[in-house]
Image (tube, rainbow, N blue to C red; front, side, top):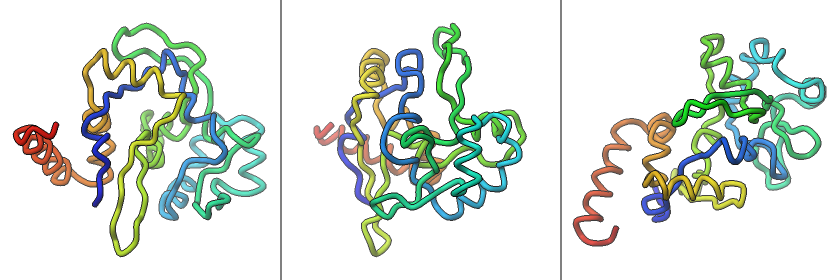
Length: 198
């Protein structure tokens, strides 16, 4: 595995009160998904259908939950050329201040999962963002930090909270690569710090 050094150095902490989940509705393609994830999403459709907009339901009826984009990647279907079909808008509580965040873009798949109505949370590419995984061939995987202007507030909050990207994404990294891999990552960080590289 190849890991961008920025993942070990850059500060990052999502600030939904500032961005309102903009990463789910901006861009020119849906979230990258695997064939296995598509099958799990299809199995979860009944549980999320009522949370989806009529436009999203229409897109899914016509082309399914995913499509192949211009770069040849399998991605979630989108509405009006940008919104993921699984987005919906609602109010949530800020986990730090416990104040409500109004009209936040949320994931219908994750909502069903957290309510215990589905076994599938959301695509791992969504959970890992802003880390992007790229298959490099011969089983080699690259992890890169994808900088995007919509995450500017997350950088500011990460600096304020002193949270580094790999720390913020601890749970998704463990979900994708396992506990042992994450422990080895922490050991590597400690070694790099001891040698003065971090």
